[in-house]
Length: 202
Image (cartoon, rainbow, N blue to C red; front, side):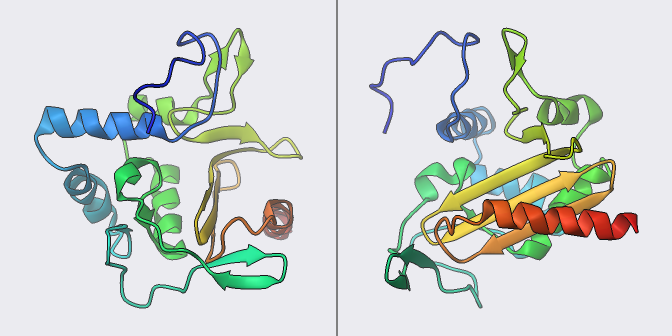
């Protein structure tokens, strides 16, 4: 997809969001270990954390009871076009449930998922010319509109949308998955998150 593209800029001089960096990282992991990436994920992430409803999205296979995926059109909703995301497994090729994603976030809150020095690389925003990128190693690391720190990710694919935020100070995890291509309601979902945080404070 991108092997013949020129660099947009010299590394370390600017920032541009993309998922393919994780594809390259997963390839490096496979070459060093001699083990497929999905096997590494199963062994070191899914099994230790008890994530039993998270699977690589393989051609022709979806877990039992998987929701029907939709895309939003001007005239309503239509079934989403089937896609094969296995080629970018590390950059958005897994299917999961809200419960598993919440359990994953709780492991981050409990600091049971990674060694502390590695964890800090995920949860510390990189800077370019002293300006925060609002991204650590794969994670969005930022402040919400009320100045509360959070980390996580918003994801969008054909037929699916996810909002995953972890608020460390409030000790709260938010995992919202939708079976619709980018429904355009991130603002509304963040308002729901704000209401739930406020209700806990009461």
